[in-house]
Image 1 (cartoon, rainbow, N blue to C red):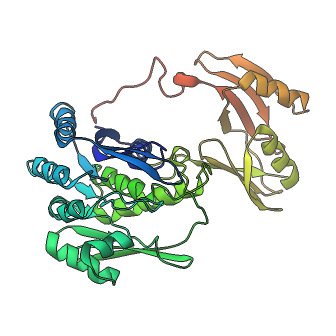
Image 2: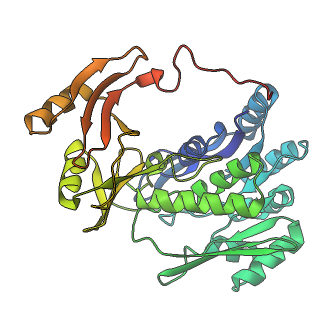
Image 3: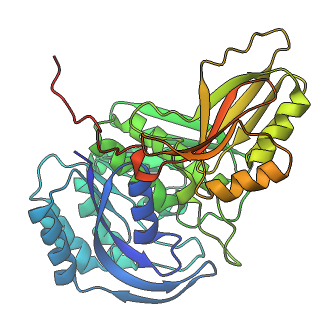
Length: 390
């Protein structure tokens, strides 16, 4: 069953953080997102201009509505709205048994706007008592504990609330970053380099939601954190550059970098002539991302799959495997390529298996199809249904 993730958080009208980032994250890593909206904000990449808390009884009604009908496998808590709402939500969640809870104690937006007052922050203690893991950033960690040393601060929260704490290094100075997961009996750390981008709005929301999906899928806490970190870093690299301030990340482009099973996202073929092969695949519409003549080139297709050529003039090319690139504009693209001088063995044809295909060969003789299948690729009328093991 698809993991059911309940997100209790505020809405971001700019789409970069909050409920909007949570839904995109849960969807992209394979979960079903449900929401209990705690506040409506007016904000963009430059800041928050207005906040309207949702009454606590409406927040609880949203929680009850989805849990009573759909059920829940993990919960992510973000912006909570008010101290009263925090207490009411805690009381409701105390009735649940064995459901992982990821608590991201949102206090300050990326732009610097305050999203929680002193009484709300004080009420966070009850939520941390219920949480599997808390994911404060460094300023939030300091505010929760009045301790300047992050490790000391995290250990104090672990001791007081019996939840794990993730120390996030994004607010540290320098190019090297380190995150650390502090549990009662274990510590796991990750190192990485800072990604040069101003599009950091929603990183905390995205990370916490990614962790929640991993826990719902049965991953250990360190594995869930590690996978969520990778999703965040890829989304930062794919940021679309929107807005004049702290822009949103590129969740929609992180399709094949993380997942719960094997993913076919890279194919390599043998080439004979580096220059001719590179020109051919660039002409098809692939984006070259590695240029290492005379031996190797890698390309990226829409959606994040990669394709590469390994040049070996002495290798025998066996035409036993075909590479397929799906194109929504199949007929128009084939016509344009043919006019540009690329020969096709046959143009677009409707096939009995409900695909429309055009066939050609690359300069080394590898078989290539440009095709359009739509639903018939994954859901043909004769699709095999799940069977019990023999």
